[in-house]
Length: 162
Image (cartoon, rainbow, N blue to C red; front, top):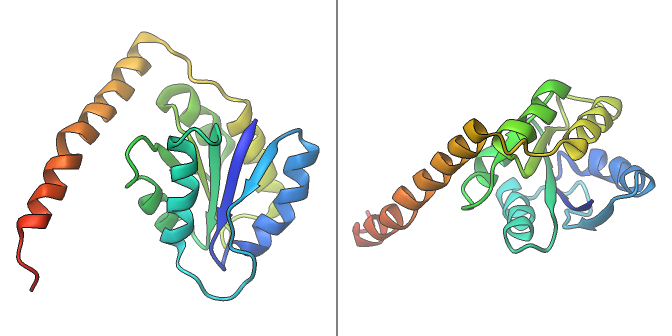
């Protein structure tokens, strides 16, 4: 699978350990940084990985930050992204099968390398089921994006800066 991977400083070490392993697993991996443990902001890396997915440059992305929470929130702000923070294999594969999750978020301060590998294996091997109920539900998610995305941005632009 063609994947992007990105991390902030808290996720840098885990990302560095995962990169060679992902390649041995047969994945084509695009490393979107960061490339050190110097402090950086996780939204920048979550956005870069998410944009690689929505632009079709990669099939899916992995984003790593300290807890996984911030990167999940940031990734899900990109229209077309369905990011899920996973710390168990059931959620990793079920998120893809039922919700068509395209970004896996890991918390480097919460899980270790072996669990990260298990999660990635489960997530990467999973396919969206395309069962009617799941297609319907993902369709409703897309309608929420359409309904609020542009309108909220227009309203924010009208608001005076305080």
